[in-house]
Amino acid sequence: MLELKPSMFRCFFLFATLLVVNPATAHEYWLMPESFTVPTESEIAVQHRLGQRFNGNEMPYIEQWNVRSELWRGGKEIAELRGINGDRPALMVPPQEDGLLVVVHQSNHSLYDPKSWEKFAAYLQKEGLAPIIAAHRERGLDEANPTEAYARFAKTLITVGEGGGSDMSTGLRIEFVAQANPATYPRDKPFPVKLLFQGEPLAGRAVKIFVGADTEPFGYVETDEDGVALIPAEGKGPYLLNAIEMVEPVSDDPVAQKAQWESFWASLTFQRGE
Image 1 (tube, one colour):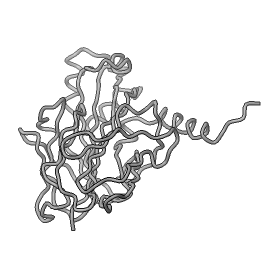
Image 2 (cartoon, rainbow, N blue to C red; image 1 turned 45 degrees about the horizontal axis):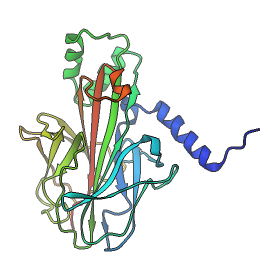
Image 3 (tube, helix red, strand yellow; image 1 turned 135 degrees about the horizontal axis):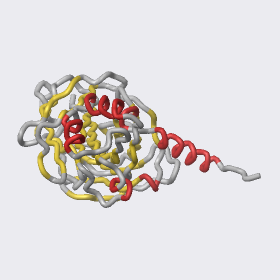
Image 4 (cartoon, rainbow, N blue to C red; image 1 turned 45 degrees about the vertical axis):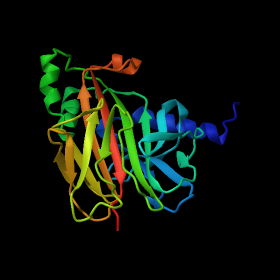
């Protein structure tokens, strides 16, 4: 009889979980550091989390699912982050000097097959993607079996020591870029973030906001013509932002090429200063 090692059990559990994960049921995917503010030269654990209500399940690191995991500071990538299959937390950031750290993660593509048009349309309505319903029909696509390829693009901002510096574009297909340093920006003012898609501002997109862990969405704000959204000042947080762009498939990924639609999910976590 084949003897399964604990690491094999961990991998089996993850892949079994991924088989049933889909945008309509899993919703947000985000990076969650053990603390958003850490002393200089401290190692930092960063969880991958998947679920709803800014809670969800902690996901282990799986190399096959990982496209990019990087550490950025001062406008440039300073390290590639890698874990070992099954690691929880998924990522460990080595000790760093003072500054605002940006951790990014990009997943590979997965296929969502809702099995019914009604389920797909309800999901589009809920996530602020209602125009896709008309676009689907305009393209003459089959409504009996809609399909979507999706990928996740997550960022988190961590203050080390004095925490000077700013967020920046890291070249993710879709990403939030904080327009101020959350640790030093006045907490009584709405916090500005810019949403980029393929490096360009993404206007008119709904941004879902969570404030504090294990909470229902606080609300939605829409990006303006410059892709900027003002996140209401609701205390220290932490905050989770989520936004989605859906287009006709544009990636070379084989999963995307087999789908009717391709979606890109952006998330950003951060905490306001004292």
